[in-house]
Amino acid sequence: MFAREVMVAFSVVFLWSNLVSGQTREEKVRADKGKFETSTDWIYNNVDQGFAEAKRTGKPLLVTLRCIPCEECVKLDDDVIEADASLQELLKQFVCVRQISTNGLDLSLFQFDTDQSYAAFLFNADGTIYGRYGTRSDRVHHSDDVSALGLAKALEGALELHRDFSSHRSVLQAKRGQPPPFKAPELYPTLKGKYGRQLDFVGNVVKSCIHCHQIGDAQIDYHLSHGDIPDEVLFPFPHPKVVGLKLDPQQRATVLQVDADSAAAMAGLKSGDQIESLGGQPMLSLADVQWVLHHVPATGGKVDAEVRRDGRLVTVTIGLADGWRKKDDLAWRASTWQLRMIGIGGMVLKPVTTDPPRNPRTNPTRLEVAHVGQYAPHDRALHAGLRAGDVLVSFDGRKDFVRETDLLVHALAHRNKPLPVEVLRDGQRKSFVILPK
Image: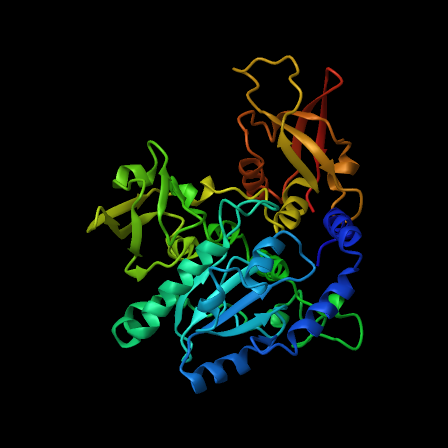
């Protein structure tokens, strides 16, 4: 669970959305239940029933994971639920399940980026995964990553795989990962005993719900209790832009732009390429690309891609160097609140908005303190003396941090020792020490 101050930060978004809609978070969840429990188009919060219906009808299965109180992906959810024109006929060809909590969810089957509040899985009735849909690289904006039209393209791709399932069954097995340490969220040590397998609609349903980000938090806690956080856990489901790819959110795994001098550019990928397969797996969406990247070791490796270019298939190989995952951004992730508490005493850092006098050769650091946690356990930076508005001069003796992500990774690796911080405040240099947790 997030500490009090983190809940305060997130409640700003919730409060605004509730003022606009006139509903509390509790009322929203109950209204959603009332709407979909009687729906003839959607099965409400019952994945097992969805698989049984898919087996009975011979249809593929669509399961959407939707955190109702979270507002960031509400637009895409509205497009799907209100049946965007591009989705109308497609949805009728699927058994559709609306899953609004992760309580009791089979994590050996449902593996996804848990910092999202909307994700979709496309299944065969036997549990084979045709593909995934849903990506985020920003806490609020989603238009660069997802769209109703993009989801429609993924659904079309799933239907193609479904029609010729026997030919694709073997390659699709790679879309299901290795079992996690715990099969269901409520079995993780930090969640066990606090949550049940089902939502409590008799009491406070919101408090009984395991949100997606809490699974990520629990995974981080589990690895910390056994040593360090692996890069594969710290940087899960890397965004394709890490390798220099920007994909078209309106299309099916189609390249919109390739960054110069990137791994994608060196592989020979070009704008307009439709990625038919990556790592031998059929690609339906940006999320499918992330799934393959997620399974490339942090130490690097090579991934073959088969792309359709000008009507013909071309094979390219993407080479990833040691440490490639660290190019991804952690700042937008909900789970980063916990990492900030562990590594930097509850500070939130951002690019500087002021331009104090400095020497770029001796002080290239361009970060300032946006927020300092006020409540335990997020208040170690506060007790050290740091304030919002402080501009970093150095952190643990280093002056080369230009991203919060890079500083945070360093701090996590040195979390068990005092971390000296030098800042500029009102034109004067001040020194502080953040003590270990």
